[in-house]
Amino acid sequence: MEKRYPVATGGILHKIKKAACLDASSSDTGKGKSKSSDNQVSHGFHLVEGQSGHDMEDYHVAEYRNIKGHVLGLFAIFDGHLGDRVPSYLKDNLFNNILNEPSFWKDPMKAIKDAYRSTDQFILENAGQLGPGGSTAVTAIVIDGKDLWVANIGDSRAVLCERGSANQLTVDHEPHIERKRIEKQGGFVTILPGDVPRVNGQLAVARAFGDQSLKAHLSSEPDVRHVPIDPTIELVILASDGLWKVMSNHEAIEMVKSIKDPLAAAKRLTSEALARKSKDDISSIVIRFG
Image (cartoon, rainbow, N blue to C red; front, side):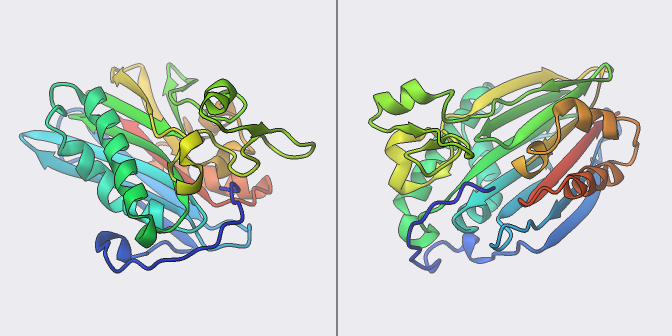
């Protein structure tokens, strides 16, 4: 994510045990599928380090858990800026926080929003250990292969393939779109020639985890969507903006909807983004249904 701004880094991760294992690499790839015999879910992921002059700051989650007789597919991409401490912490903790919310099974939307909020508060309270940076997020929870809950803050995006067509599930939280809110909270949005809109001339998204120095003007409120999974829904793509900067929703869906292997599909997306000269970290997860 090319959303960096000049702030001195500092602090160590001696108090945040989970975040101490920083395992991002120049590339990462894998695949899997749910163990449930009904409504099978399969996925593939591929992450590639960009050429922006900093270490890899994208992290992902792609796993299945059996909880209370339900099969949950948990998928996420966290696109960090000013270091990888915040996305690393999110990788290890955000889904646990969501699933531990008392309201999760009755009201997943409330649980997701509450967990995003409390997780962001923890990150801010521990900025001394987690650093001054932040992260966008796009998360997807698949329950028993029947219900899809997608949430996001920032510009990492989820796009559905429904009846063969692209349907964007998430909202790109761009500063110029939320300008009124930002100004009401005492901030400002710069729009300079040759550059993207930025909050206080610094960050190119209006919502993110962390970013303590800008938090008075940023939001951590996610947009949440629920999609009942039926035979018209083929797959969903989760990807960081390293992909979406160079590819439209329609192009991405057209590129992979006929590729049955989700790992091959994820690799196809990242390789095409590289071919189109994307310089940012590029991360994609393709989740197939049925």
